[in-house]
Image 1 (cartoon, rainbow, N blue to C red):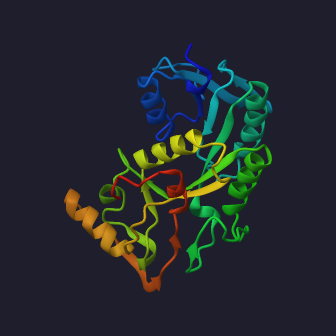
Image 2: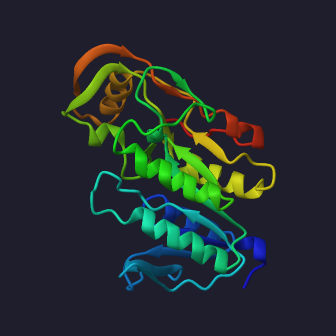
Image 3: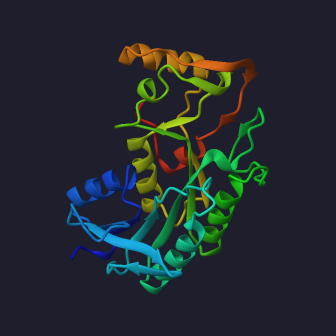
Length: 256
């Protein structure tokens, strides 16, 4: 076993959580990353699943950092995200977690045209927002911290492919709020490294905010795919400011 500071549990070792696990394992950390199955392809994988309102799990790292990267799936009526998160926080406390960090979403902010910072008011205007807000509050009440992530891009999530030829809701002149996978991983580790001085909440969004039309046209040209169309051309400048985390020494290094 490594030292206490070099232990990490990642809840939801999927598209975001798995590369975080692999990176820190390669650096010599003791790592456990959860998924719902009890069949494991990687040595670090552990089962964690909600059954009959109880957590079934294979975690045994005490005094570890905990990072929750479970997608909320908040649009699904049968989501057990909040119950799973509640029990996971209790489990983390029983295992003497060094800290609990939640990967949330900038979807907590309203869709109105404005510049949103961590000090902006957050209120549940839509059904999608409420589970996100509730999850954040659970973590904050337990002394944890929250990262509000912009739209995620990276391996297997290339915009030039997933929007190709589609008609997109919203305006062609709407600004994008995106962030690259590795920047998110670096942001997570920056907060863990600066836990005592870090603020409770940070936005993690690349400082570039092109319009959707310009952004997706460029990405589709890059992949040789057909650019999407939009149902509107209204100006829509909704910008999430992700600069506050830079006070911890973090820098956005990967273009969107």
